[in-house]
Image (cartoon, rainbow, N blue to C red):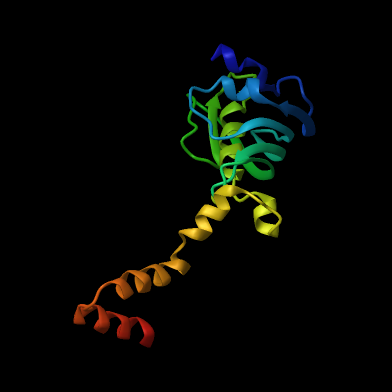
Length: 185
């Protein structure tokens, strides 16, 4: 694929042993992929160590940097540090085979290996599943969204149910039995 050409790492002509490569990964890289990303302003550094052997290659990836995410609670943007690490062995065979995450096969006559897909996947895997703004975690956030969440949280649910029950003249006995079960647990 021509659009990923910049991410071809050429190994032909290199001596046996380790060779260092560095890439600065920003938004134009992610624009090459046809997906809707859930982060903005990526500023990542990729360090790649290519260890050339007689019959295969070892690729050692280290990804580090920041992306801007939206907090799951307040939806406010914040800068999130991410990092990732991966190792791949590249063998030579008859045709391209990237089906294994740890062993790639490229045709015998190839002179370079493309790392774009690996960088893309490493970035997505480095993103946290739960995205909480640091100010929310430290208790320093004064977001109106947090106030609303606290107001309607499950901790207040029992108070709301009690208020509703106090307005009713007669309480259904089934609710009383459920309350007893809840209090016993």
